[in-house]
Length: 208
Picture 1: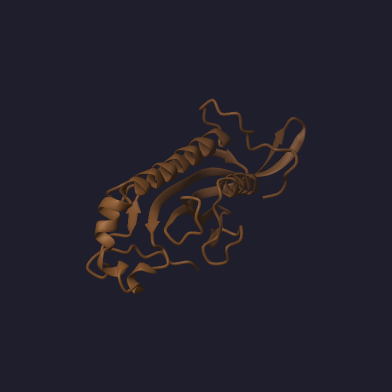
Picture 2: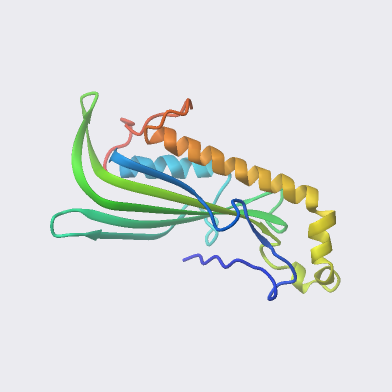
């Protein structure tokens, strides 16, 4: 499991993990309706891949760090699902700038149903699902600067002056990814945001 620990003084010479939404806040999407968990998974997974994100542990496309399902005697289910994803920025290999996304899915008291859409039967869930998304810009994610004989003494100056423009551009890029991800998920789950993506009832995908 990938564990993200925010790097900041005094352990580090300067703050190297910048929250895109400050003050510990995050984007939150909540839907109380019938939804297709498998298709929702695939849609968000493919969207992250198209943006250039990958698994921080294995460099592949498996973002899932945790899948926990609890089923009560009455059949109601509760889920906690954690995804972690990173993306190399500034046309580099991730040595200087990297985006980090934390997506936490939570379902509350959902039940299984069968839903007919255009004559096709889908296995679905009905209940409440919440998706929370938080993002960071990671500077020197591999902590190479701390080991450099010269750079380690000038890190704060580098960030405040020499790299300030690039840092601003990278923050804008990650914030743009957050906005697009939120908009696409809302549209996919039934929100009216005027985007051209498909709804979740895709006949090419079946099962939970």
